[in-house]
Image 1 (cartoon, one colour):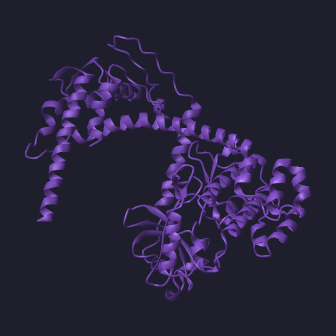
Image 2 (cartoon, rainbow, N blue to C red):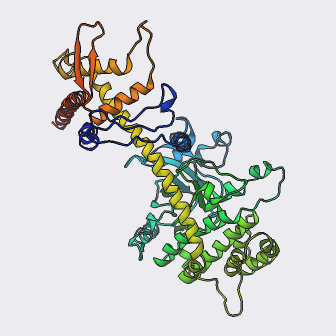
Image 3 (cartoon, helix red, strand yellow):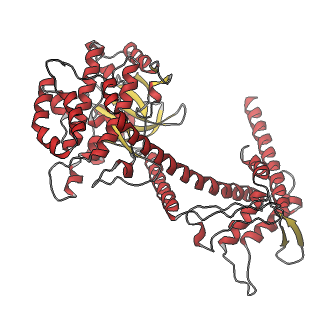
Length: 536
């Protein structure tokens, strides 16, 4: 058991030094905890209090993760007819479609799960669901009325993506940080096609996040709101990074559209997106290409050439950049109206605005992706675009390092808090235990009695008038010294005053380790006996 060995590890690592926990809010109840160097032969410098910005980021990050956890726990009512649309191998499903629950309640059971027509050309439904096999949460996308897809086609498409390897990093393309991992696809007994991808709670598409009409109304107008250039460069850099790996592995993306790119705020600072500025350093967004493999399966019979598919990926990239710069979704129009000629027409209509609002570097990149010339009939390759973005990659690297620093600060605070939780959990398992095996007074004798008195010393102190002392600083200091197994001695007394014990924090730590290990061994033996009984 990892918990049972943590105190022993702390003895060798932190002996003689009581650490200061910097969790946000710990210093609100009884004074800030201090660092002590009692009975230590060397001088240990005092730990400076954590800045308020670190505590604020930790609190914001905690709130964000709590909200994401609540989103992950959502599930449909037991009598919801849409349960029939989910394969039996998945449980705790919840619909992620835009449809209102009230519109789905009265659906005919014969049409359950047949969602509205999607951008892929087939009726589709999207769920978050937990797999019975590994208990992980996935995004489950169902397509109905698909007659041109067989088991063999699905297996061929999945194998192609599963075996795609980045030749530079020698890792799977699906492990790229800007790609939503494609896990598997299959046909159910109801002749529906399912695609399983990673699920990211709270993620929205670029189209939902940046081009939503409700956001536009917040600023008193119904006109499109273009994004700032730093935000656009951040998005472009991440999408190009994913396309570079895909094209280098002899594959094509085929799903680069605004409604198929997920926009995920970073967990480093827990900040919400600032729609008024969209500054990449403030937002720290992660963009991931979603729906990998779906178009390959649904259009498998088309047999398009790989160079043509890659060229279309580059044009789709240009449409996304133009959409972000103008605040209008141009991907749907150009994708269905003749491709290249419509792209050039749309670009020339927006050229004056781009020249006025953005740098020549961004304008020229859009022009190279969406227009052609006598000496260049096709858009540049992804590797040519990587050369153009060389300087912008350093800006993205700076943002990544800042996010990493924020994550490290938050993690250090949570780690220090977890040490306190570890001690409290072990004390909770041992103290006041009614019985252990045949010993009904196990928690009242020996080492356990010392732990009981120590619990009263830490949490149940009172003043001369008998009023409870709620000194959080004393609690933190005592737990710090217990975690460090300090040699400082304290006096423990029973509640009736009949017993007095003079022990060190190292003695209490040894008693806690011994008692907790004894409980763990007894629990392991009980589990082993139960497994053996079920086996027989």
